Length: 216
Ligand code: MN
Image (cartoon, protein in one colour):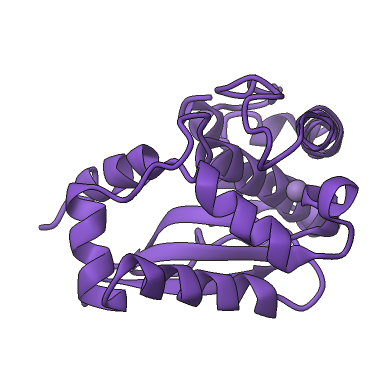
């Protein structure tokens, strides 16, 4: 799954996972991955396409542009476009943020920033775990780079809100804490799911995002 989903246009297509459905076992199970990618993400894509079908004037906008420039959206479809485009963006980000190369640890730039902001890798884990546990209902916890201070921070978003309209914040990593992300395997134990997720975090993608930040 490349970045292309973020810059792709109507009609949107569900990109395949960058790893096998069962490749994150035993930390995240194959059944959850099938359901999450093929049903939940697919539904956001289908609903986004359905909502945009009668609005040819919006077909030239990319997924990110639809969210960032939501002022251009007609009133009657603004909410469904934002909810569904957000659902596509957040899920694509989440799937990219995991890898079957289990047990990766932050390297180079990510490691430097983690030490600078959280003191240690364990400090980072505690910060994002607290944020993920603290999301009330459905949403996401994020690791971000704050552009001005050049420091990392953790944030929360509700439902399918994104961080795309938050100025000066560059999203690096997210964890989906909607119950469908863990209910089949961990039941109501969000705590257990988060602990498992640490084993499949794609630190290479975080590293790439950090290196791609242009400081002017
Ligand atoms: Mn989800």
